[in-house]
Image (cartoon, rainbow, N blue to C red):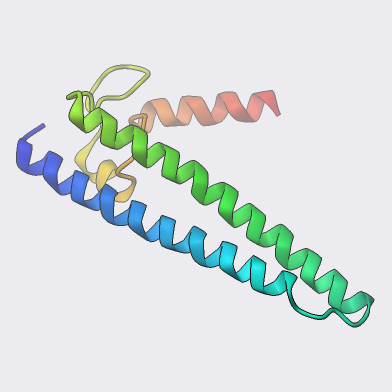
Length: 120
């Protein structure tokens, strides 16, 4: 992969990382704010509980994406970025543009997804 492409993806990953960190921070502040609200009845408690569950799911999912971004950034530094972890072929440029922290090429990703579905 050319240096200009690596820099493009590195910038893309860093921008996404900053956005996720901002989202997580805002969601955590929102949770703190909700915890300090006066809840008057069961409906208020139920609504707050549902909101907390949703916020926790958002934080968890974005935390996973943050980890994948950090792994991709580390791969850029070690010259492993853009290589499929399964078949060791180059991951397509168009796939990386859509998902710059992709670990697998399209073909291998399909295999991984089918394997995961078979386990469940």
